[in-house]
Length: 117
Image (cartoon, rainbow, N blue to C red):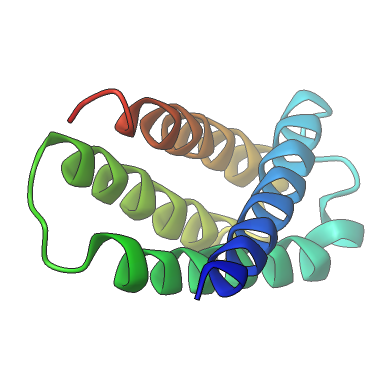
């Protein structure tokens, strides 16, 4: 079971870092190049979210507390970010900037969760 957690965590982290990192760069570039990276960003988003769901099911289960609330906020922001990137594809500067803010909230909420409870 531990090897599964390690592998899924690695997928979650690598996909999330690629997705958030490329989003931050594209936001800084005013969306230039977003069309080129769109597919890989959406694949990374899907992998990050799917792996996060697996980790939630294995590690969190039905627990409710400050840490789980923080993780939930981060997960919701990630899903909303992917939605903006997909729905506002024709407005790459706006979609990447909004997604960058949401993914920053995601990263911070997940990083601090372990210290909340």
